[in-house]
Image 1 (cartoon, rainbow, N blue to C red):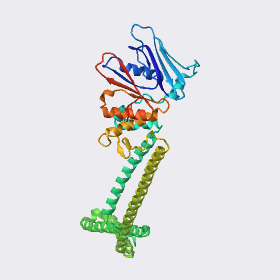
Image 2: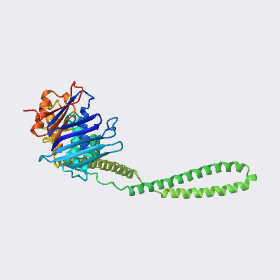
Image 3: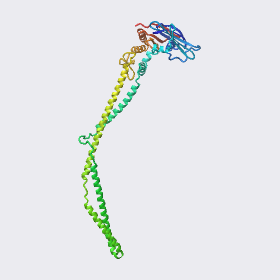
Image 4: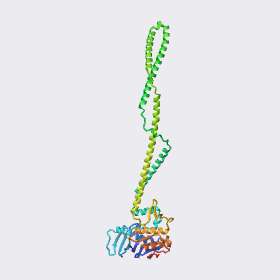
Length: 422
């Protein structure tokens, strides 16, 4: 299926009627004379896209483009797009006049991606080339890439934890793990120490009482001596002091008797036992802390393996997704940054310009399997070798070439050609 004829009336600056009958067309002329308008008339009419803000020639009330498409059996499909000040109307009909009820849908299903320029594609940045092919193949790695990003963040955190734990375990003194298994109970030894302390407190209190009574007895004796000098005057006071002294002596004797009956236990061995228990428990705690670090290190290593497995699974999902689609060109592959062809980046420093042109042409042809036309916007940039590659590729694959080329001609010109010979 190719372009058979185009008729354009008052579309921008263009009014032309050109019968091509499937032949290639080279549009020539200076910049600004309307070369692009001719090709735009075809592609705008067929796709309904990129319609200019002012499609009607100045001073005219309306414009119309008619593009006739001829299939391989010789049948003609007539596509008309008319423009007024308010709207544009699309009509698609057979040569016999039968109209299609959904004209744009019919064209969309028929024409493919005819706006694709293979040389714009090969000159794009790698990421744009990749996105174009992914969109073409309905591939979307957004969720996979987001999950992979999260997993890589987890992996980085786990790696840091493992390094920290390994450094700590390496620097720690390994505790003797053979003997120190369980924390020992200090309840009974502590009770003994507490009892000994209570008894010691009783002894201290009794000694204080005895010391107090002795002081009192001594003071009382001194006072009695003074009182004896004044016995007559102080008889009553002396008798009172005698009573108190005798009572204090009785109390003192009682305290002495109680004190002599008390035996203070020796707690030196218990204190040593407590120290031994504390030393033992400290080693048990060191052992537990060391084992906790070992367990945490093992956990982190397991988590790292799980994350690595998840990343591999995502990568495999990505590979499976790519395998499930049909690439427009054989030996074309995706990388994180762009595309590879036969293992090499789509770069003029890696692949010859002729091969890049060939790849671009193959992609364009894969996008337009039904309406076999090829659009080259700026043929003036091509040398004779590059033009020969393009024309031969179009001839070999039976594609109709539309080529714009800047010349010194002040008027737009058209050169119809079958294509270059090999």
